[in-house]
Length: 304
Image (cartoon, rainbow, N blue to C red; front, side, top):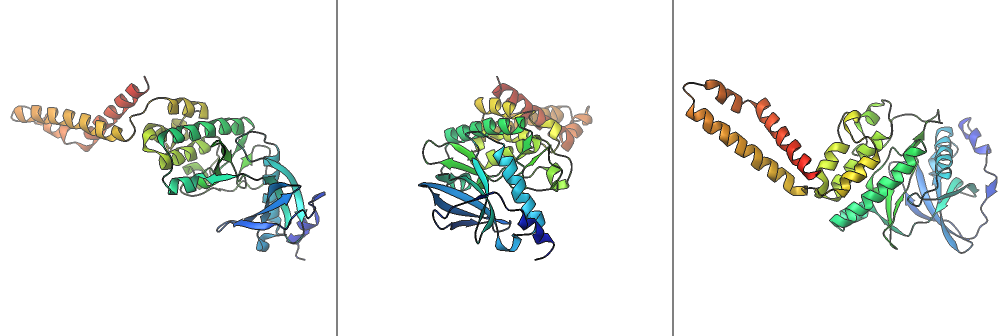
């Protein structure tokens, strides 16, 4: 054994009896883990283990143990339940956890099977789950459609995969993590992160589900964390309000067009005596300002 493999000698106390042979159900393509399903005492369970090439490697064994400890400390209906840290012959150390009979949100998005009402329901459940998570000082750091399960029975949300999660109580594995297209700018850059990085990822997720909450998405995904929603409670309240959705860009364009035409007409009528008006009308900065004013006005109206 190599020196890294020494961690492997620290086996969990619990050893799963061979109720059934583990069946491989998923192998992470770009990651370090794989999932097995077992039948234990008449109930399905899932085992999360390391791929063969990562077993016994200190860094990844530590990641698996950290994920177990974070998951085991959580108890919420919107989070996949973690039961034990176990050792299974031919698989190694594993996290034993709840089997979820459902479909991933990524599959639902791919099949275009999400209505506006379903979108709202899913996001509101996610907000409740994230509120609990953040109150426990835990940041998921990898919120994306494939890590959200929707149960077949009742359409309940289950947040899974805490392999990249972090908590204030840990001093290990603090490196940048997450999935590039959903990770916040501060997470990608390696800067300090807090619960607002999950809010950023939530906004990215909402944008894939429905065009009806574009204002919520923009607020969630501001590059500056201080300009985002201050909590998932604020996201939830914004989701409950009626939004202009896909009509918002059309309305903004119409408002800006009317303002621009009015100024242009004024500029044409006063071209000889007031050339400054034409300069202002065609100044890109002025047009951007008009556009932002129109956007703010419409969003203000939609919040009332």
